[in-house]
Image: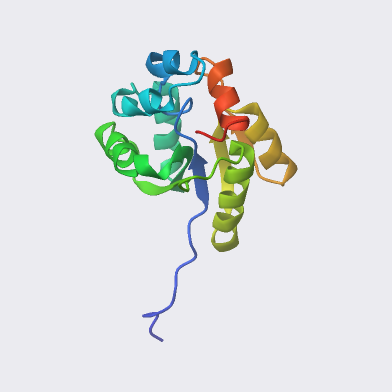
Length: 167
């Protein structure tokens, strides 16, 4: 009997945040310490982010038996910058899900919505994020989540993610 046309079982997903998990954003945090925050300046140098080796190694390890998906609160206008950054740093290939234009909901809300959409089509084995509020929301919804603790936490960035819906 031929198996042509039969669909294969999809691989389970390993989902990675970018900022603070894979990308070191500390060089651009000074843009968020002003009032008002300089979001244009903060995002303008995203392409220069150094890679966080711990996150990159974890992504490579999980890519061996998972499909990798990047789930970031970055705004959609940074899609090409972000995709180029992922490729330049030789991170595993994967889908890139981003915040829609003018969507300023908290990161925990945006990411949970996008993750539920992903999980409707494919099993999600693990999500890696550095925002404790995102991690708590995803865990409460039943997802297995790893809190990335290898990057420096920033109060202005956290405020931007959760109160201003900017990343």
